[in-house]
Image (cartoon, rainbow, N blue to C red):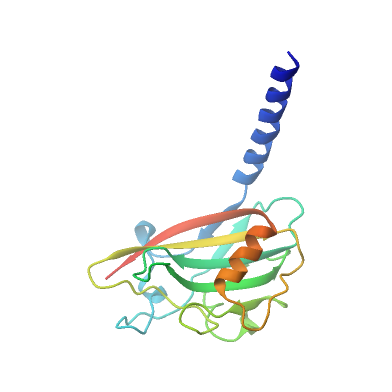
Length: 182
């Protein structure tokens, strides 16, 4: 009977945690049908989009959230390891959105203390989608809620390092997958 009670209690506690995690939501303003709009496509590598980062809005962050990390990742890029298009670290806990074009250049468009990390193209800015001709790629936007005020990142931090530290300090995450093709 004690074992049954312990298992039931553990299941109830896990269900409460999962229900809370389900409250954390991300909305990415993009084109129709779950696709990135032309404005969000790159203007390099043979693409001629606007290279403007989309607006993101999040809500329902877990209790105890002290900062956020936002990423855009293409798991389908022909690299063997995907492609990091956009990484923003150290967004303050009071943040609940990034405006359209917040990723386009100077960190002055970001909340105080936030920092753009160089993506796989080497630039510390948003890089729009640009899949090879005839292919459709997934673009995963994620906001990580962290239990620390900021990540202590070196000047040359990589997206992989930010991801490692976000997972190590994470309280929860919310993701949206959009598609791009040409």
